[in-house]
Length: 368
Ligand code: GTP
Ligand code: MG
Image (tube, rainbow, N blue to C red; front, side, top):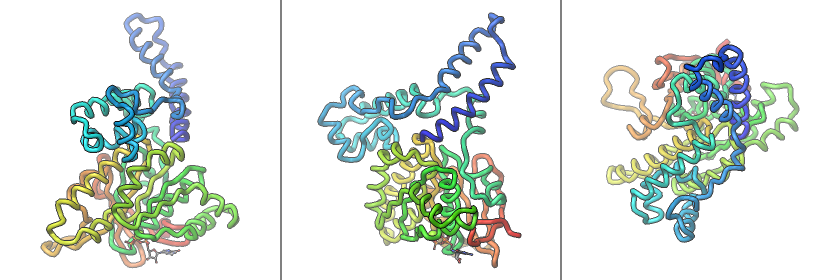
């Protein structure tokens, strides 16, 4: 988070210097408001270190020792958690009436905004455009696939990668991870399928860069690995993630195989409602994590074949509408002979497009 913020700061300060040279409004009374606004932006640019901000839940009206204890028991330890979990869940945890919890979430959000820990909710549209352009990306290094995603994965967004077994979903995550840690960033990898292989990370790092095996292994320290063999473990891990997120300030969070775990555990039609409720909760949390902790969250998803489809590709991601609506970007990975195909299926800013890639010792690379 710190690196993300400081990277963003540097860019904003540089941009501010250019703006200052171009617009000296101080002599024009009609533009005084703009000058004040500019001054404000300048002050806001100097984001405070997150550790200096009081994030304690006790500053919320009505949160006493008992409520605080209850919140802590469920992993809600700070104001960011209050926002990530939302009023309904906080109400369930504390047994406090929903309107009071609404006000806590509102107040927590306000404190985070006032301390520049998150984006202002009423940001000027032009500023928002600049803000989006300056968000740092984590790329795969495979230019075809990067282009498909507008340069790589960005903070404040969730990326759903779905496709058949062996399509390259985990390899995509490996490749992104290698690029993030090669630049000194931290990565949190939540593994639901037990397919994370540190050896493969070392192999990709060594194939991509001129580094020794010792140096590559050293970089593994930037990865925090969490294995979640079942959905209870997964949801518990996500709920308790904020402490780790605040400590590591990761450039990237990966959830490999999350939705598939629900499919395996919740069998039969009778469990459908409960399954979708749990998946919805997970989706809300990871979406909020990507926003409040300013990091990209990449999760992989399995597929099912739709037998009712007469034409076209019958392959569909699992998880239904709950997953579909929660993902900012959906990318379909497909085997196509020796080559592989990544298709941007849903994006708020990209047209549907394809990118070809192959898998080698370097991870995802362009087709020669
Ligand atoms: P599931 O997790 O089973 O749903 O599949 P996935 O989409 O995650 O597949 P994954 O990313 O694990 O990709 C597996 C494919 O990558 C297999 O076809 C492997 O042959 C290929 N692969 C894995 N490691 C290497 C490697 O070191 N070199 C090359 N060339 N290919 C590899
Ligand atoms: Mg996999």
